Length: 410
Image 1 (cartoon, rainbow, N blue to C red):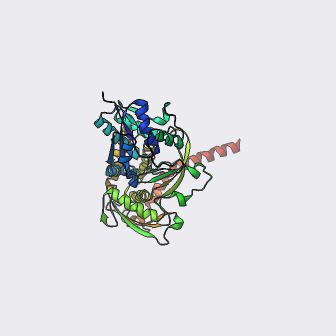
Image 2: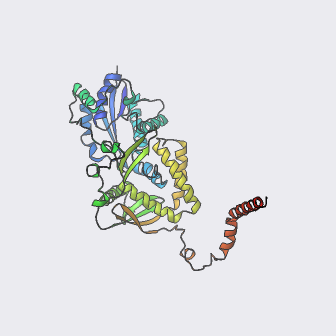
Image 3: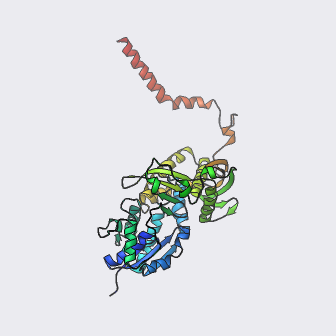
């Protein structure tokens, strides 16, 4: 009789390597590994041999980079969604697309369960599990770090366990930064970052970037072109979104752009400290905002800021596959119908400076904005507007004055 199957979200690291024999031993499953390529780069090298050596029946490596960029990253950018004003959601919006592909593999393989290696203290457990529940409520979810049958408490425990199962891979028990990488960013946690009083050791920590101090002494000029909120060209060259992000990462990294040190509020209730490198994303988001500033009217721009905060919270909390996210995105797509044009920027030692923005949908009128009187605006018209606009304040002041006068006469 064939064994039941479990699909494991597989990275090839120590945790997911140890989970393979543990799943086989604990649940008597055949393990199908699935690595979803969201831009991890060299981390995928040699993964198939490693998975099978560790006891997996099969490994899927599924490239979703373009889908990730176009359907997850860019809607979030178009919403101006930034969690707690700093975090550009690099790990957060990767989890729903990964979960979607895990479900697809599970359906294809006829698996009864999906397993992930997220810890019981982090946000990723919510992101994976909420997404899987939304897409496949019938599939069992296994989270070893919350499972009472999981007794491994340290990296050395995991290494010893792997060795006992005949898996001898070059893992180091020495603790290092905990990192998550995709095409959008790299996150760093652990070591000196666990104490907010410590300055990050940027010389050892940074992967994509240099510090602003080590950036060039001359500014780098770039030009981004957008159509309906989507980036379509960089420095005059038409490219797909993923290639624009890759090139912006290289350009931004060299100029010390997008290094964020944040103490954030996790969904599970604790604060955590991390450093995020998002050079290309920081540039892309700033360019998009510059264009919105030019083409959106005051009320739409104001409401869009509220939508951005709500959108960022949904993405951070793992609620991508929800009606509210879909509804908010529909609003965002409507707003971005006119977010078309060209943005020029100067990058200098961690700073992004405006260098000119143009759009066929610009709402900026030079004749209105200048100090000269034009046909559309007469300075005298402001008098009546100010009278009506300030009427509530004037009435309140009059009533306060009347009350004070009555008190004086008592």
